[in-house]
Figure 1 (cartoon, rainbow, N blue to C red):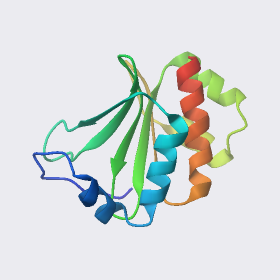
Figure 2: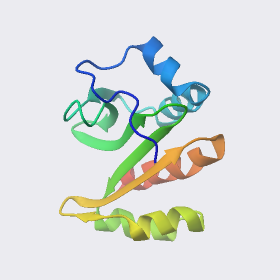
Figure 3: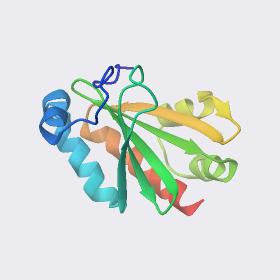
Figure 4: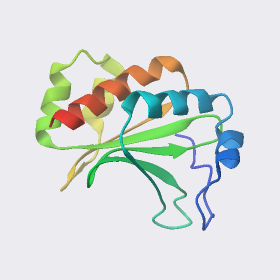
Length: 135
């Protein structure tokens, strides 16, 4: 996966900086934000070495993380056991199911991550967001 575009930064990226790094993927980023329509968007960085990510939340609950890269972005979900089982029942591609099956397991859930480089990648993100919201 591509590295975070904002490693080493102590402040969140500006809108212009985000556009410059995402390039053509900015349209996909904006489309995803519009489609998910989650009310809380918070920039977060655990350390300058990690870079910055945008947390999309409903109340106190984080639904998905978006991490800007150069020309693409990563999405990350932490899915509980019920959400993983619900994802298995959805019509997700074999490639996405492989990512879920091979994802690391943490006490808080299964850490599912993948990179968004094309519009076709958004369908799985939207479906997993629905699963996360329902479970």
